[in-house]
Amino acid sequence: MAIYATDTIIALSTPSGSGAIGVIRLSGNAAIDITNKVFSGKDLSQQSSHTIHFGLIKDGNTIIDEVLVSLFIAPKSYTKENIVEISCHGSPYIIQQIIQLLIKNGARAANPGEFTLRAFLNGQLDLSQAEAVADLIASTSQAAHKLAMQQMRGGFSSQLKVLRQQLIDFAALIELELDFSEEDVEFANREQLKSLIYELNGVLKKLIDSFELGNALKNGIPVVIAGKPNVGKSTLLNRLLNEERAIVSEIAGTTRDTIEDEITISGVNFRFVDTAGLRDTTDSIEAIGIARAYEKMQQAAIIIYLFDPAETPANMLTELVQELAPHNTPLLLVANKVDVYGVEKLQKEYAAFENLIGISAKNNHNLAALTQQLISVTHADKINSDELIISNSRHVEALNNTYTTLAQVLHLLQQPVSGELVAFELRQALYHLGLITGEISNDNLLESIFTRFCIGK
Image 1 (tube, rainbow, N blue to C red):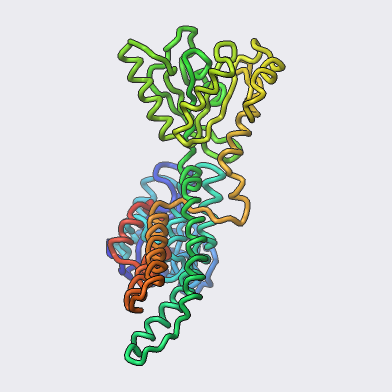
Image 2 (cartoon, rainbow, N blue to C red):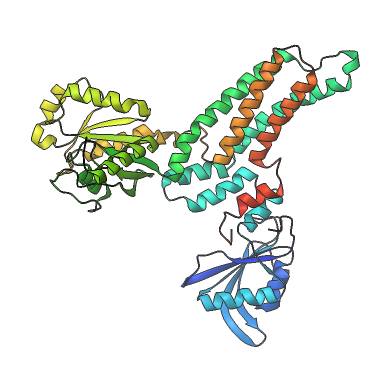
């Protein structure tokens, strides 16, 4: 990828394939002039920004299509360059003919993510906001959409910039001390610096801790349905998905491998995993399925432990909970077949288990309570508040490195060391923070990020 290229780029911005319309986008200083060469209508170079013009795209005397041309004149555009968007009929042939004609007249085919890369390089977006654009395009649920919008609107970036500027101010004072090292002067108040680092690391820790939730909401929350054989796990999966996804049988051990599918509940995407029944077995194939069930539980964000109260008395359930507790994963206890066992009896016999839910998967009884509990456990309501949540693994790595480096600064401040060591560690902390928003970047980092974008964005 030519990171700092300034030529005019072109790409289809709508999905490939036949459709009602296709939108072809150009960006660059010559975007309007290049389009003008093939556009029969008004002189585009004489038109105002944010206007739309009807006309023909012609290759010599051959009409290719009737189009609408939208103009966005620099710097009032997504890339802060001249942008032209051509809305044509969605025939793949027409789209290809127009793109090839514009390339012949001076445009170049865009690389993946190159429009957003230019927006970053031209100061329209910082790096974390640019990455949020890709997350927004990829979002498949309300929760993922809200996370991407929060980041793209700069909430995360704004907080980091404030933190980084505070560190820069202190680092500058310590660097100044080094210039006067022979005079033994102290410009930076060490106690104030300690207080600042404690405050910064408190904020960083909160952001780091939010990643588990943010990543799950972005990629879908894995929920494992576990339990003994024949307690209704597959029936529950089918009811949650509202389709016959898993085979249901009265024969114990029917499910021998994991079955996975996704559903959106209250705007949050959940990935449900039905697993083999947990029991001792001599069947080698079933044993493999049970081993996979335990593996999935270790990877899960939530475990639904489904049981039949007629076969699992309260004391046995206590032992099972203790067995699953080491997974350190939210565990929802769900009693199935309450239509047979009885709701009042369940409430009496299992009163010691707080938040235990009684359902009948077969009859769709009380499943709403289960889905509501799933939403509650995810803390998805935090997205609606002002609390910042991160969902990008690159960001959490940089935040962890910043946190560790600042902890080292605190350690050095407790020792009789020179300001040079403190200054070095502060520079490292500033470097890691700068990687997130793009104050610090290099060609390899930018290429790694933007080549994951779709072409046309």
